[in-house]
Length: 260
Image (cartoon, rainbow, N blue to C red; front, top):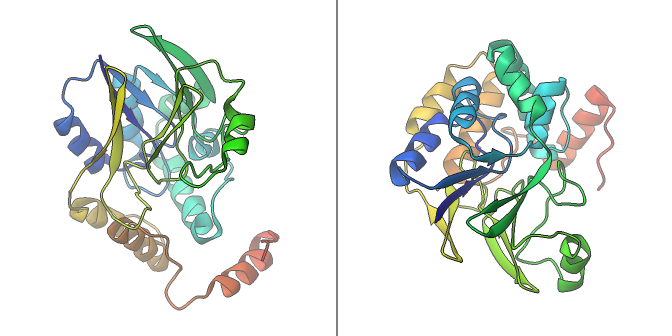
């Protein structure tokens, strides 16, 4: 059985099409949350998931769109999340927003005798947790995953692909299809087949998505920052602004106090 696993689509229709061309006939498709946010095509991406996903869970941006809120974003991306979710609220049909609203925050399912647990963050904090599988200590992983009754635990939210094993459980983060942030702009996803898992990279151009971002009714600085993150695979700040200046700006505008 060939299972396609991906996360953090972020309204990137072109990346979705490239993945579909690379994996035209998987036996199952598992989505780990964040269909929306940051990208130009929230409606078509949600519609594709409705039609094709075997199972899907809610991410923090999906929750944000469904409930008209914004949380769990990094400081560098907070304004981008607010702007793109506000745009999505205007253009996404209510039926698609309802689909995001009814998604579970985590779910376990059996595929061909193997149990898969899907969550966007972690089983302890399903929406907002960002767990770095590469560097998290073994005892912390035990505390988080010992109570999860599944052979394979799938999670997203970090936008960084990783695979780890702990006491017979396979822990997999496929990275981000729509907004990779591991220092390389190549979208990533995972394939599970016959007990083995692989991270797959799509070596594609983001040219069309960058063009679409340029046409969104957003502030120029917001568009430029979105484009830069997509083209570099790294978090960026608005042009000419330091991280400390951004903290003070947010405290003044939103009353949010960011830790130093």
